[in-house]
Length: 185
Image 1 (cartoon, rainbow, N blue to C red):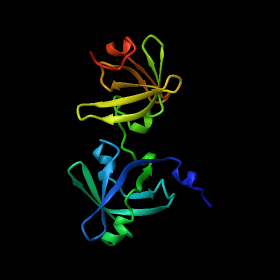
Image 2: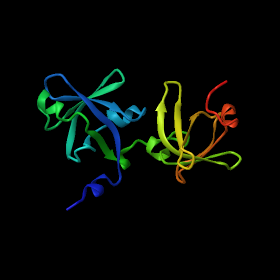
Image 3: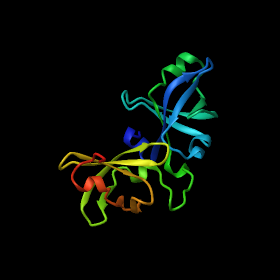
């Protein structure tokens, strides 16, 4: 029998169920990606609740965009009460089912936990979070030694080199960080 960790191997969370939608068992999800094809091409998913550790597999019958959300019609969820029980579940797919990206693009899981260095070789920390700002993503980097957080925009100006395979990123130091503060003047 497969353990839960084996079930999650080679899978990636692409969304979270945040609400029910309508009376016919549809669920509203918030995507964890800005690559719409990941969501619109969903076919079979593993639904997993990290709090309760409950999971089940389902076939996606229909996907509809709804502003910054999507609405899924899932096999086995027939009414609003069943849909409400799914709130909090994450939607996992096989990594192999992710659309291919060009070398300039990345999936969040590829850079989370990456080691970050300034271009002079100074260690900055590990990528803990990716923040969507609308204009561009921002990586939140945490250094466990001094417990400092550094925010770096994911733009060509600040990202010198991103090695997804090595999980390492070289960044340009932001001027106001150079004097030891993360506050803009």
